Length: 324
Ligand SMILES: Nc1ncnc2c1ncn2[C@@H]1O[C@H](COP(=O)(O)OP(=O)(O)O)[C@@H](O)[C@H]1O
Ligand SMILES: [Mg+2]
Image (cartoon, rainbow, N blue to C red; front, top):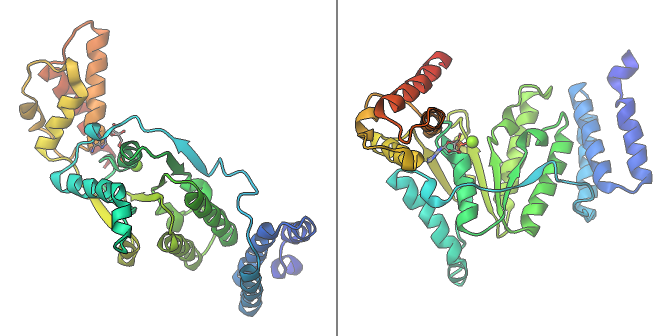
């Protein structure tokens, strides 16, 4: 028992030996950091520190060969169903987004003046207000491939392994021009299932932010979060722009319904219907519209009536209330 607690685990030792024989330096560094983390948890601070120093000096002499392993489970090529005209945003957000496009399209001009286009964007705010959607729309508008990072798969029990994965992802970002979305990225710092101590989780989030800060690629990096409050203010400085998403105003909600109902919208007064509803997100309103359209189709009618829309919205609103 004592042996088990005071030494690196058998798995780690085997892994160290194997990666050394297989000349897999990336893996070797990862496991070495795992051992350091393990020792730190046992209170062997000095040993942990020494191992980390060995790794640090080795790292500076190692030329890391990127992507030995398959990254397809971490970085997924996605497709956006939406275009800019589908996205209902406040005037303020529209202007901010247009500026991202404008600067991207004139990056050479900016560069000739020693400036860079804004391309590290933080999207924050209520769930269901279009953050994930926006990332896809950016890719679509700029004719760039859209990649979603599987943030949940990024987190492992071991800080070293997570850092390795992050490093690999940022290599991909450098070598492939595209829009890269870290959706609900705050999970990086807060995963409750991970046994790590708080300090270590903070380190993971910090190293993520450092990667963002150091990134000099031509890609657009989008990080999205629903939990603005829980995030450190220092974080905002790492991004070129922060876009705050809010629930739709009555006018935006009406426009969203107009868009979504399309040909199914009869002569109803949408503004009047929506005036009875508050605190519904874009996503919930969209769902209510789809619910109404489905009922309409299945009952062989051609138009959604205001009472049907009202019923669907009420259903979504009460679902919201009962979950609060
Ligand atoms: N601002 C918006 N304009 C139009 N549709 C929206 C908007 N926000 C959300 N939606 C609809 O709700 C769905 C879910 O939104 P999503 O982008 O996932 O929200 P978030 O990422 O902010 O939680 C979208 O696929 C879209 O159908
Ligand atoms: Mg989202």
